[in-house]
Image 1 (cartoon, rainbow, N blue to C red):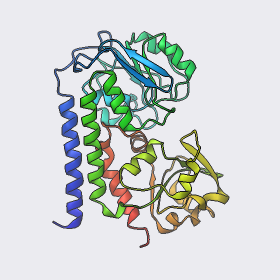
Image 2: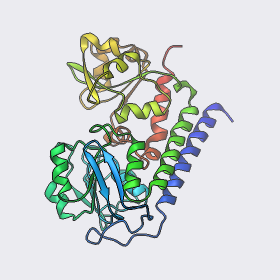
Image 3: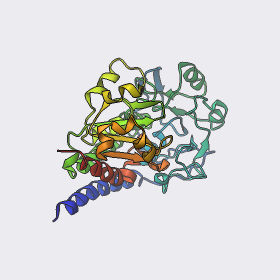
Length: 344
């Protein structure tokens, strides 16, 4: 088998295996619930009560939750992958369709079972909408809720926040925490393993990626934004066998956020083999034509993955056990093409 075909076959096999695993997790007895009736009849019975410790406290879930509400990114994906219908999830904005949904939700999201409530990504938690959904569990595992938000949410229902810091929960942590909260910890762990296997197989099928360094950026005319280790965008690429360059690792030392600004005078402090970013502010042609940004080695070499599709950006920015099969083949192919432009 030619090398390219073998690579495609290995990646496709891993992705197909993950898709089959997702189908198996969602193939329990179908739920007939609606937002008014509760949404976790299909969940397997876990050990309750269960206490989940997190950055904002410790939450005791006394019995199998039946009306789960989601705040933030990705937790809805996990619930659907586990065959659980949340009663309310955030309406998609960036990269979503006109209805506020994403393509990887197809076959999972049912408007008769799950309501879309306003997103809290802007820092404003929709307390009234959440309370109206009458939840018995609120999942905010990958979110930016504050201690004050948490205190108010706890008055509505038991709330599980992020394990350490806002917006810095890994997709692996998210899946296992959500799985534990709904009594499907073993199924969640299996999905994590299968998803990581798919990422590993995809990377192994593209040996040119191994050990390549990358900088994940968001560029403006004035500064180069750099995402740091601990951010889901960066951690995903590390999961795929790429490496963070020393300059980015240094920026992360002592950082309390997932992002740092680098002035144009310092852009070469974060040089790497591959530059990854998205074109919200600067299209690639404009970025590469900039007299400073154009001198970045990865830009000069053409070793750039510059995303324009907002749906694709959303998926790769917030990977989950549900959306990895949707974007993996495309992402690894684009990274591979960039890696092949790195000088030997």
